[in-house]
Length: 187
Image (cartoon, rainbow, N blue to C red):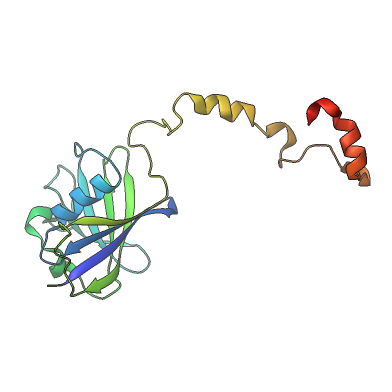
């Protein structure tokens, strides 16, 4: 049995991704729920996959259900569509869109195919997590309310590029002069 490894990138930031391993006999619904779990999203919204090419152009739609929207061709249904049937080449790509009002878009790329199934893994499974995923609702960060205080404390807008006035006009301080300026109480 083939095990497929997909890398699921956040469209806006390719440094944030999750690797998901899944059996080729499982459905797109299984992949859909695995992506939501990997990014800690709920499953309360509409979702769809698009078969894609190397340029990330949207092709045939594989939808969670048939939604009340215009379709170029009737969509395939995730629960009825086995992933292996939609793999056209070893670099297959899909676009995954979740919550049509927020339009969360993920780029899904097949990065590995292996025949070795791991008996200890319950497929589908997340095999790698890279970067901090986005918050599904709002902009609450890991720091919570403290983030605004930290952001304000280190606000560098005044010095645009993050540099102050020190050292301008060719001035250079030696270590001794710098220590004299700091004073003894600063150590």
